Amino acid sequence: MRVRVLDLPQSKDGMALIEVMAMRIPHELRDEFPQGISLIERMIRINYEFRRLAARYDEVNRNIYRIESGGRSRPPTRFSNG
Image 1 (cartoon, rainbow, N blue to C red):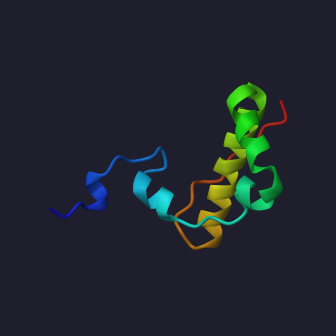
Image 2: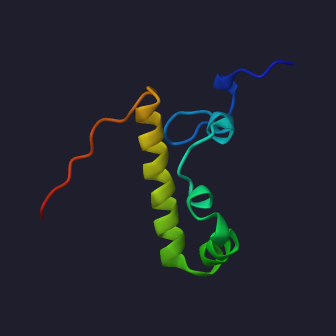
Image 3: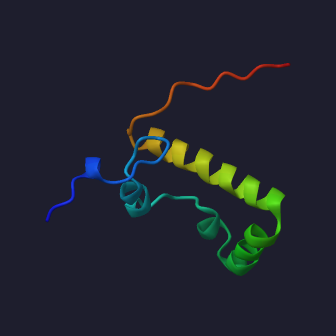
């Protein structure tokens, strides 16, 4: 049986989750700080704020990668000053 991408669970960006997992995305936290992998993993488990920031870093990093690699991008985010 052959599985089509459309048959797979989709992430919030509409990409099949298997596609996201198969990509080699540069600048992941593990790549940037190889000497601190165990500390990063521990902090993600025990510190809510670190976990939140690490997840945000991953989201931004993946969006940058998608844009730079010519993939589809989201509309620009509008920031307000207030």
